[in-house]
Length: 323
Image 1: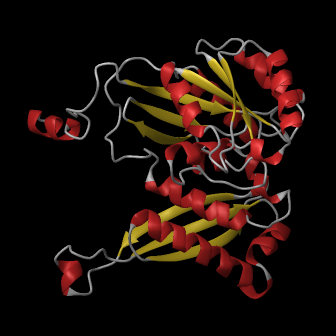
Image 2: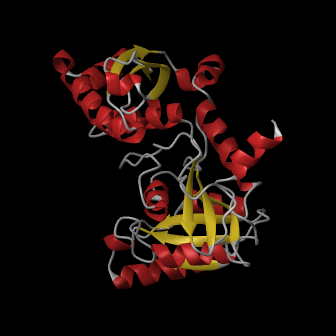
């Protein structure tokens, strides 16, 4: 990289308004599946970054969302649900969580207020005893319980481990999300910004597109499907400009996105496609709207549903899908 290019790459980071005690660092959000990690990530960032669903194990990638505050910057790493693995995919997802835990400044452990603390929470709490970073225990989904139930939950969390802080929040309503951000920030090192102030994630576009499609496909389906569904973006092709504004670069051109949706059984393929392809069309419409907003341009989505038998246990297929 030339000196001129290096200077250009840093221009978004170097800001004259950064205070002397500015803090910046990485915070990893952990918890068993479906405890509100993605909702909390999106609430802290201020817009949608991570896939949200009421189905367990919807997050497959460690999505980084960037929280900007006048006094600092938090880079959130939203991990897959930590759990006792039953498949090769589950083992690799757990390995991903461990790698993230070893390389962050703060750990945020989510425990949902509407569920009792169980073996899964105890399993994670035991793993976190070895962590070098401070652990903040977070009682999520506080909007779903009474004050009495919340108080009991906070006492149970306190008994579960030795935490730097215990914070009740609701990612859905925003209750105490700003306070949580302040607490996380207090544990970060003094540092200049790690990302430009206009960036809210460093996730590749392909990964975000695949996650948006996967979220749309999971909406309203039976419980066994989330574990068996994978989305692969094969190609993103920009069309030729078709008017003067596009040729002059004043108007974005349309893009074609070719996607494969993989399931493990033919019966699951039927669930995704639906009668006469009706369900797949509705998935495409929902995903296309969000992808267009993400890319800032019109999108043509070409989706194909394919069966890859037991792909969660197939090392070659997992490698092809990026796990």
